[in-house]
Amino acid sequence: MAKYTFRTKVDDKELDEILSSLQGTERADFIRNALYFYVKNKDIINNLYSDIADIKETLVDLKKNGINVKEDLKEPEKDNEDILKEMMNDFLNL
Image 1 (cartoon, rainbow, N blue to C red):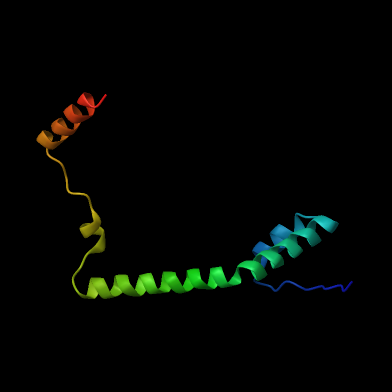
Image 2 (image 1 turned 60 degrees about the horizontal axis):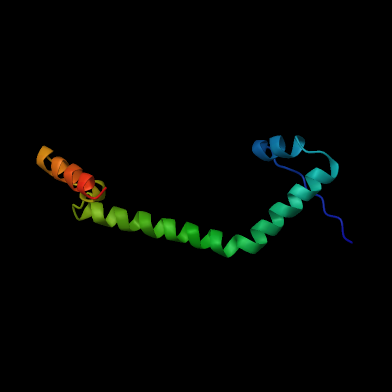
């Protein structure tokens, strides 16, 4: 069985906080589980980053073409008559 050790860097304050709160085998188990998680899911994680980048690029392109995605996706406002019709329909469907 091989042993591995590593040192955190100066800017790894978040890692230091997490790891310093764990003791002995608890710390070793945490590191091992984190590494297993990354190894098993690295392709999914990388694909998510790629998909997010593609979505951002698409949104920028849409904005350049004058399409306001937030406005276009908004549900049209209902007037009082539409609201009353929906309420009556809901009441009749009880």
